[in-house]
Amino acid sequence: MTKPATSGLIPAATILLVRDGAAGIEVFMVVRHHQIDFASGALVFPGGKVDPLDRAEGVRGRVDGADGLDDWEFSMRVAAIREAFEESAVLLAREERTGKVVDAARLKALDPYRDPLNKGEIGIADFLAKEGLRLAGDMLTPFAHWITPNMMPKRFDTRFYVAAAPEDHLAVHDGYESVDSVWIRPEIALQEADAGTRTIIFPTRMNVAKLGYSPTVAHAIEAARATPVVTVEPVVTKNEAGKPVLRIPAEAGYPVTEEPLEAVANVSRPKA
Image 1: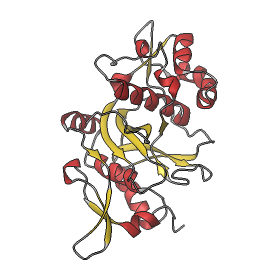
Image 2 (image 1 turned 60 degrees about the vertical axis):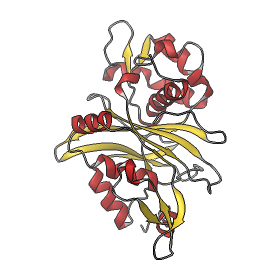
Image 3 (image 1 turned 90 degrees about the vertical axis):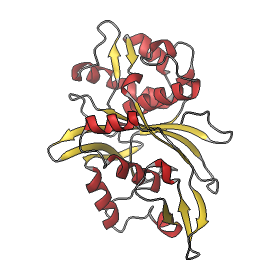
Image 4 (image 1 turned 135 degrees about the horizontal axis):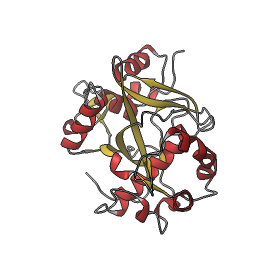
């Protein structure tokens, strides 16, 4: 479901960059810096807040697949691609002259832009115009849409996308917002979270599990295209035993519909 962000919510976007590994689908994840004010130390997908410059004049004309998108969905896709470039050095963009996705050599030459983009010293429109690039918005497939529960002091309106990572792009963390990174199979990520060796917050864990339904990249993208996105805004309620739980809609397609509130609160602290 595509809808404009509700007042008071912070619009944000993230990408599940995926590839086919020897044992099945793998997703790229980064470890958030411990001094970041949201999900510090957690294993997350690359992403972040929509920047006002993502909506600047001149951006829409440099985004493939932008036709027909409302302003909310358009800005989400721009932010998702920009944030993935800043955080993981993967850039879903095409050369304006050839229409081809940027290759490894070109990507290396563009690397110095990551920090200025992150600091807002250059806007995405100026970056694209200067380098003769177009964002490959059509490479993103909507995967999920989550809104932070209303009892939280900081609330995000977040769109999740799934996209095949270009084969020759070497994904690496930025060393600032993220301090480590890994290509990991969904089932391994969940096992490590259960063992306490990884910290994965509830929305991320649910989307890792959802991705795990797919054995390959092609299957994951096809499934996402065929399945309507149901907005998830978890609510605090009580289960039949009277225990507080965080509940999400069953129609969203996740393996569970509720989680003990205590478990969700404690997931921010790994055991090791």
